[in-house]
Length: 338
Image 1 (spheres, helix red, strand yellow):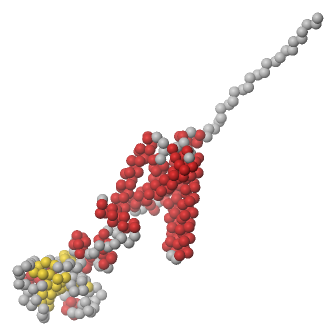
Image 2 (image 1 turned 30 degrees about the vertical axis):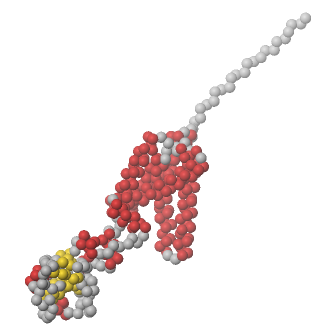
Image 3 (image 1 turned 135 degrees about the horizontal axis):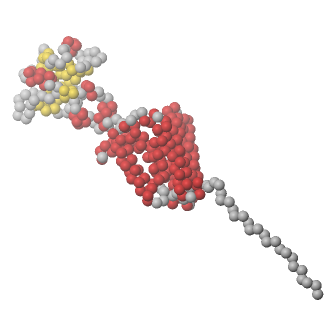
């Protein structure tokens, strides 16, 4: 028998170990996604206010066409912002618990857009109240808007270590922003003066000892202010009127040429009946009219002691002014409740 043939087999070399990748996707883990999400939110939060402000200037053109067109453009910009935020949270779903579902992502985008808008408005109000020039610096304004929007995003992240400090910061921002908003804009006194068409430089308080004013208008009412003596007194009533000479002496309010001869700050008794005591204060003539037997010295002293009306006196005399718009109404509500 012939010997069995054996075929020599050459062992195969093992496959080489795979080389580690030279580049890692920074968005493959939660930390990387957190960085990218905050960068995206910061850019959108910093630039979106400028875009919206620019589009909103279309309302200044007036007319139905421009108003409708501006509103449509604002809706398009708003929809685009929501879309970009939705895509951002879809690309970084590990950062927030809302990134797992479509409904959650839409809610996250809406919260970032709405909360970021409120935070930026409050932050800009606070900044403008303390430094008018801050918002005129474009880079600082973008940084402010982006930082505040990132705070809103941080409050929606998973884990208390980032969410809790962001929530505290937003609460502090809300309080300080509302206080700054409350203290800006026209004061209640300014709104009342505007509604009444009055100038506070024309308001002079005249106190006559032994008399009380019935309805105080600082002499600006058509028939003046009536002063009544104390109960039981035999003295007659007084009338205070104020005449503006800034445009000259014009009837019917000013029909006395003696007004033009008055010396500022000096009370004088005009001849005739009834008794008339007058004094020039700036461009205003204050006149007290009394019965013929009135104590002229007391009236002169009262006019000499006249003074500009104080804020509480003006607020007590002028009627309340209704809010011109919802923003002013909210500001008035804050002033009454904070």
